[in-house]
Length: 234
Image 1 (cartoon, rainbow, N blue to C red):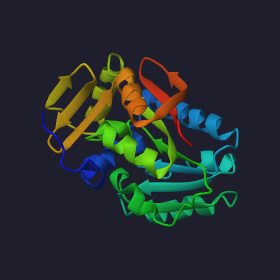
Image 2: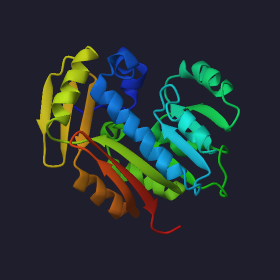
Image 3: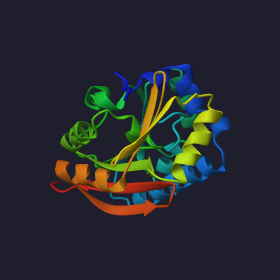
């Protein structure tokens, strides 16, 4: 099965631009993302977190959700051009401290540097099936655990109708899917330099548990699932 050497590659390419373009979002995708934001807002509403970090934030999609809950927001994305757009969105709301940082999920410790301190309780969002672009889930989750973040994982399901929705979505984005791989733990779409997987709920939970996370809140449909995971030792 083909594998990307750099899991952030398509974020910087024309493929990535189309994948994240809202004009390609059909009703299924819009509904999925709406549930994602509602899930995050519900977690932030209890005011136990001081900071929300969104990896692969695109146009700082979760900024307003953080602002509504008086939580500091940090959006991280590999695409430099999003920085100016982010400043515009931030300027519309003075209720929340917010910033945009250029970087990828694998470089999180270097990207953050001195942007957070030990007194902050951080919730980190892996939005919109971002977890499906990670080459080694165990290593990534361990890294975030060691940094000291609780996480939310948002992912497509592995079966139908999720696969048919993804298939139609990628086609709308102009991707010519060359191969589909159905494995016990994942369902993967491949074409050229693009690859994206959805992982089974059991697999994600097992990996998270091995690293040291405990699942405390879930939401799922037959299309997607959402997990809120906290570190067992805090």
